[in-house]
Amino acid sequence: AIDTIDNTPNKTMVLFVLCIKAELDGVESLSLLNYSNLCFSVRNPLSDYETREKIVFNPSETLEQDDGDREPPHHFAVRWEGQKKFSTLIVLDEEGAKSAFKKMKKKGGKKKGGGGGEADVPRDMTADDSGEYVPVLAMECRGVEPYAFHPLGNEFKVTSSGGAVFEEDVDLSEGDWGEYDEENDEAVGVNEFESKIISV
Image (cartoon, rainbow, N blue to C red; front, side, top):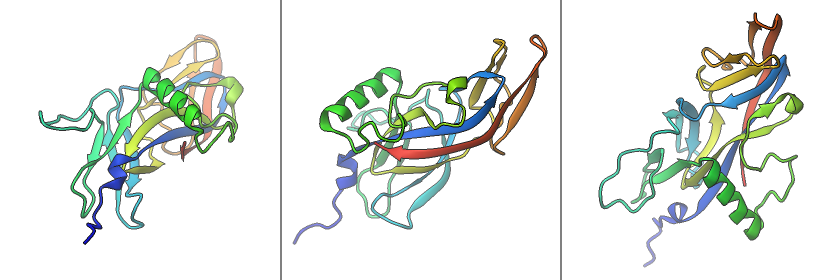
C-alpha cells in the first residue's frame, strides 16, 4: 500500500513575493521595514479549507529550533492536519532574494519578465512607481502559501520629497495615510494602498 500522506509540500520550495501599489503624493519612497511585525493569512496549498488567518512574524527573528531540526532557520511554521513535518515560511534578505531569483531565472520561473517587473527582487517603492505594483518582500515557502497581507500600522517608512522621514504611525491598514512635512512645507500622502502576493 502506498502511504497517501506524503509530505510533498515540504519538499517543494515556492517563492512568493508581496507586491504593493499606492498613489504617492509628496513622497520620495515607501519602504517596508524588515524589523517590524508583519501580518499575513496563509493556507495549505493542498487543501481548500485549511488556513491560518492573520499570523504575525518578525522578519528579523527566526523561530527557535531543536538541535535535530533539519529545516533551515525560518520565520513561521505550521503543521497541517495529517502532515508529519512542519511547513515553513522564510523571509529572504536582499542577498537571499537575489540568489533565489537568479536560480528561478535559470530554471525559467513561471513569470518570465511578465507582470511589469512584479516578480523581481524586492525594493523600495519610489515616486516613479506611483500607481504600479512593486515587489517589497520575498518569501521562500515549503507547504504553506501566503495569500493576504494585513498592514498593522507600523511596518512602513515614508521619506518625503523634501527628505523628511516618517517611521512611526505610518498606518496603511485603511488604505490611506497622510502627514505634513513642516520642514519643507508640503503635504505627504500615501493613498489607495493595495497589496497582492504572487508566486514566482
